[in-house]
Image (cartoon, rainbow, N blue to C red; front, side):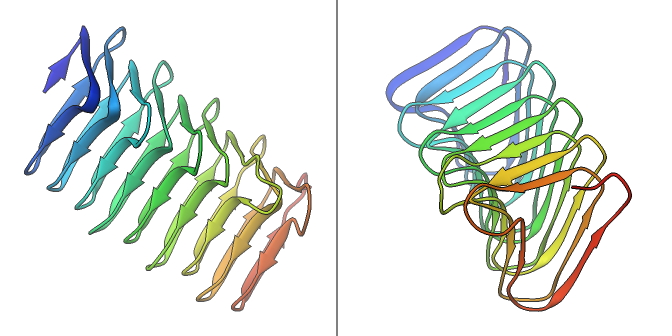
Length: 212
């Protein structure tokens, strides 16, 4: 599916693919629905326009794959981007917003890269990874609004690298559990309620020069 116009469904999916495939939403293109884009097989989604969901996920990859959101891209839903089933990667230079839950959810291992200028903003968390270890790299901003939430929550361990200029903020800045985790910081990790860096199952925290 390649879109440069408008694809709208008020009560269902903007786009749904029942098997593997690719969706490209070009600059100026809009895909919207109760859920934005769902892919039931592993696939790739590239967005430079707008993908909106009024009730479900902006993007849902049921069997892993990749999501690339460029500087002009906006993905928004109850979950911004949600992945399950297999390894997935999310690369963001634009905006990914979770209006009710989290902005970026990795359910079966993988990686989230938020580049300089990128915003991954959620209600309960910015980035949440579960079931398998995952890696989060940030040079942009990953905030979470909920007082008991986290900017980044690794529920099965993994790595968080926050580069100079990067901001991670939430009730917890970074929270890890489940397995060993490493947090490396040269930017800002801010907690509004609890701890800036909470390591719940062993690991290491390195705060480099310039890190806060």
